[in-house]
Each structure stands twice: as C-alpha cells, then as structure tokens.
View 1 (cartoon, rainbow, N blue to C red):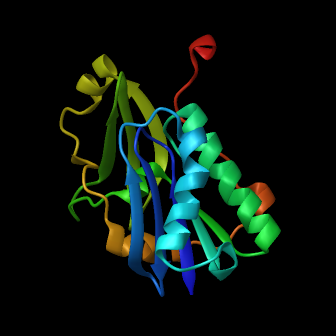
View 2 (cartoon, rainbow, N blue to C red):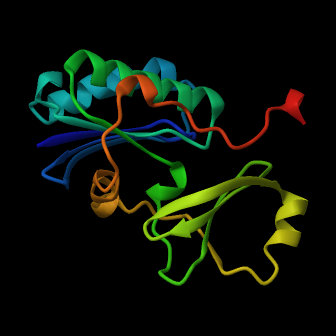
Length: 184
C-alpha cells in the first residue's frame, strides 16, 4: 500500500510516500512562502522520482494544523480533492503529532513566531489544544512537564496516522487553534 503524506502547515513543505508504512520517498522544500505554486509540481516530481502515478496512491495522510492559515488550507484542500477523486481513504493528523516527544512529557509544544501551540498528550496523539502568546506561555510553563516538538518522527508518522479511522473527504477540515486578529 502506498500512502501519500502532505504537510503544508509551516514554512517547510513536506511531501512523502510510504510503502507499507515505511518511508520510501520524501521531498522537503524549505523556507518557501509560496506553497501554492510549488506543492503540485513537487508532488508530480515526487511521483516521477518514485516511478509511480497518482493512481498508485492508496491512502492519504494530511497535516491539518495548527499552523499557517493559508498553508493548512492548501494542504487539506489538495488531500481532500485527491481522496475524493481517487476514492481512497484520508486521515488527518495535527502538526504536533508529527514530532517525537520524550515518553514522560505530558504536554507537547510547538513554537511559532509570536507564541506557542500547546496540547496535552493522550498516548501517541494529543488533545486539548491551545495557543499561548509568549507572556502567557511563560506563566503556563512553570511546573509543567512539557517537551518541544523538534524532530519529525518519519518512521512512525504513518503508523500513528493509521491508528485513526479513515475520514470522509468532505469532513476533513483545517484545524485552527489560534484566534485571528479580529477575534481577539
């Protein structure tokens, strides 16, 4: 089974193909601010590199956020279109679930430009997501057992995603935690 991973939640674009849950091909494009212009050509290049066509993909995993508002929408939209048109399963994982954390960490934390995404760990997945500004994080982090997400766990990523039920492509949506400026 070939699983396509799409991650556009941050400045780095990540596309990967797993064969039977083992990472086989990966394309990372760093420091891009125009995911919308490079994502599809990069996907085509990745498929060519793997000697596959889009019809060889059997399953899709998409990072649905939190992260860049536009980036998350782009990745989720591409994943939904592929899932729906190819009639293949789709699963979503959050950006915090991408990373490895020490087994004793109760909270996972992702630092972003002006603050932190924080979530409570439930086995390999997370729950109770929150966004904290820098000053809020300073107060919150005292006496908390947390770890920063820094290293992507490529080998276990799709295994983690496959622990979740496949979703209907129409119900997969971006996951936003941070309030936009007008909501504050």
